Amino acid sequence: MKISNIIFGILFLGLLFQAKAQTALFNVLASKGSVKYVSAGSTEQKTMIIGKKLFPQDKIVVGENSYLGLAHSGGKTIEIKRPGSYEVSSLSAEVANQNASVSKKYVDFLAGEINNNGQEMSKNKYKYMAVTGSVERGGDDIVLYATPGLPARVLNAPVTFKWDLNDNAKVYVVKLTNIFDEVLYTTETTSNSALIDLAKYNTTKEKNLWIEVLSKEYPAKVKSERIMLQVLDSKEEAEIVKQLDEIKTEQKEETALNKYVLANFYAEKRLPINAIEQFEAAIALEPEVEDFKVSYGEYLVATDIKKIK
Image (tube, rainbow, N blue to C red; front, top):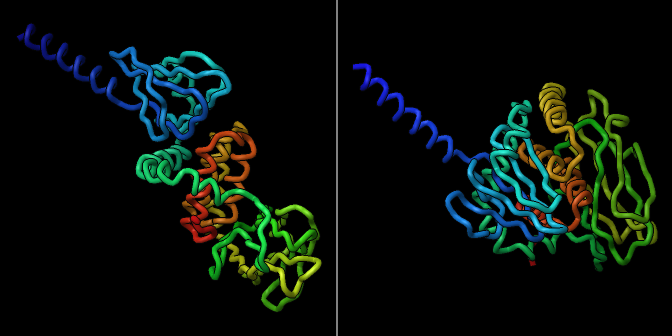
């Protein structure tokens, strides 16, 4: 009886060890340059791809001027920029004890989306990248980054609005108005973005505002569509802000990967202007990582802000 118990215990421990060895510790969210992986029991170095699951016995080889963005199964993110060879189990040990209970939901959601859409994103990689470029465009329309014809949900907080440059405009006039067409805020800029603190112009009674961008030279002709901004009610906003603060506490490093997680958090909450702001921030921090641009382009197309040509 004792011998059978010992045998059962050995078998159980063996199965437990095998199960742990087969549990993925990381998902690959972004990669640039020469990044390889070596699977357990193999010596072959294979090219890393986004959506790849990495297991405890795997190894990672990062080359010069390369980048790897990983999502840990516990909810933390990690960026690798230094060249060298890395044990997946050792990387996991660095982040496994760090609490990320709230952000885990959104990191897992992002990893799942990449796993589901990775092949389609890869197929249309350069088409998606093309829609994110802030190039000079002709015509009379200024393309403001918001879904045409629909209200844009926003938090009652500072947010950056973006639009495409237009070769018929040298100076842009940004106007924020209320439902009575009273101008609450206006500014002029030669760039293609403007930061507006919506909390200064919103009241508990006035939940809908309007924003538009016009050419100073041809305001009646060269302009954007007027977009309604729909400020969230206090209860929904309080819940989102609470989650947002917790995510920022757990992912406090100012990295491109954490901005990328925030972009997808806002996207999941149906806050496109805020999501776009974070996508732009991620790309600004790591401008050579094409995966961020591809994901951003896919989001712009999915929300009908841009079209694949």
